[in-house]
Length: 281
Ligand code: PLP
Image (cartoon, rainbow, N blue to C red; front, side, top):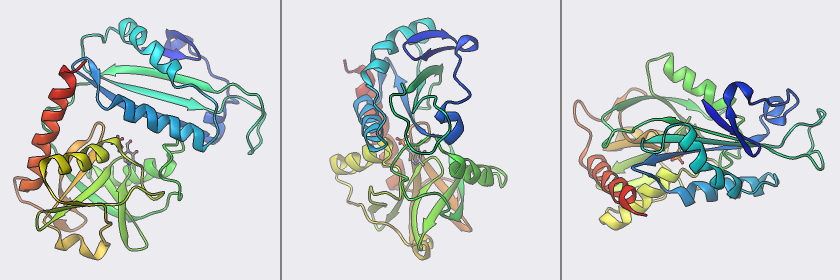
């Protein structure tokens, strides 16, 4: 792998970061992942804006334009110019003697790399998800590299051959360990409002907008845990999850063989958006 680190693109073996880096010590950093499809990054500005907002929220002084400037070269040296790929970007608060509060005048550590990945046109996978009470923090809107809660939750899912763990907080379904969740009932789509209890997923936002353009009624309203068995359909969204139908959530099964009609309609609409975007620009 070639990686971008603090202004230079180098082989990953030569990319050295201090052991005192606050990303390593505290998980004091942010990350972003975006998909390059047919030569364009899908919802690039939305991803970069989320990163900008996060940096502002946690007061890291880094200009996202630095990443943007180096993306073409990174793709070139990674031999990814004509391949679909994913891009990972991370900014930490940099290396400083260990103290919890923010150090002064420390340059942030910025890293990114890309790898070949072509996402299926329409997500053919059906997810099984397990349910767990929220045990992460209350700033899930910050895309922090402190992902221990998410990692533990996903491992818990994995140990039960499930794709995801879906969280609930105070009896309300919020999101999953690395994806957002939607429900459908009587033709109406529901998803948790964008507040501090969920990550404001870009794919979530794409689906919200897709509902509007496709004339599918949508409410940004949370669903109670007690209501999940009353829902007709459920699906997960994420950059690499795309729109993934939920076959089961806990003990409840949403479908036997084929996902419900609204999920499939949105998957079709999502595919058209990807095709449109990959041909733009
Ligand atoms: N929720 C969490 C906790 C995530 O980590 C992610 C993606 O990494 C998402 C939701 C989905 O976000 P996006 O659609 O921007 O990939």
